[in-house]
Amino acid sequence: MNRTRFNRMSAARAIAAGALAVFAAMPATAAAEQLSGQALKETINGKRVYLATPFGGEFPLHYKSNGQVTGDGTALGLGQYFAPRETGRWFVEGDQLCQQFPTWYRGKVSCFTLRKTGETTLRWRRDDGYSGRARIEG
Image (tube, rainbow, N blue to C red; front, side):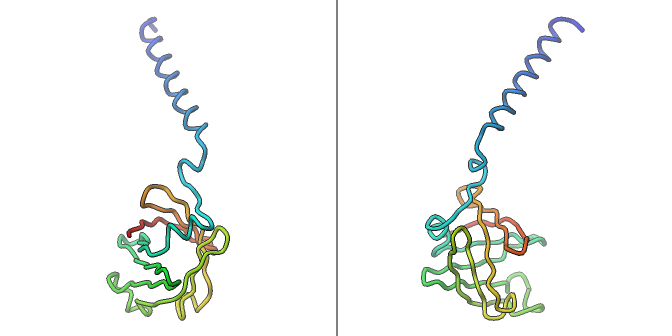
């Protein structure tokens, strides 16, 4: 291998190694900040959260400042499977957003951890292990 080509390859490797070192040194919170307590309340309160669905649509949840949350799946055609629209309550416990609906999830409380991945985007994980993406409006 000639010397010029070797130097270019060495330079490319050095740049790649440097870039990897920079990304490895970045704190995990820079990529996805976990929300908790007051920050979680401020992020959700009065907002609409749109959960990305596996079949390409979005499921909207409106978190009202009075502690009510309304989910509406009518646009997704979910009425054939269950009550497509329901209002329940939401609250924050420590680092989790919790919600309870009268009939959805058999009336049980479900709690989520939320990680902010962008200005209006989130990753969520429900206490039963389900997870996904969402966006916030409002």
